[in-house]
Image (tube, rainbow, N blue to C red):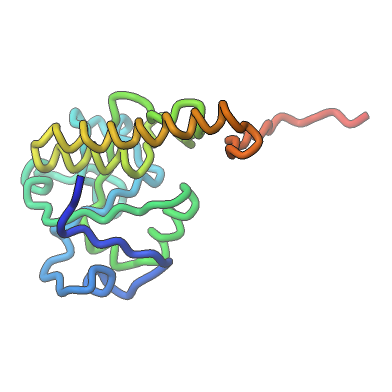
Length: 181
């Protein structure tokens, strides 16, 4: 799958959306930033899989109109803590429309990687869900999910053939107090 107008930027901060894209942007509010943060679709009482929220984390009025008017998408890729750092270091993202997702299934990573929340997805899964919905093209999600599944299959094969080389997910930290001997 090829996204002709996609721009890949590696770094921590940019002064504006225009600088990040390398071209002028007339209205940043027509760009969606996919950032989960602490907001949960279930807590907002929304009935859709994709929800536009405001700066306070509250559901926006006119969901259909907002989502229909989206011109582009900003995806924050990295670990959860890296995505949070990108969100906080780039104040211009507050001028964009923040969107969150309510996936119907957990991440395809399964036991290969733990997500901090059940509604947490990998960047490619989130992009597939958002793009296919906004463009009303389920084939986008199918293609991206198939590509992701191929990557996961190769990863699992590597783990089976050479377990020492394959990175393992860190175990969940046990926060219970331990008795000292």
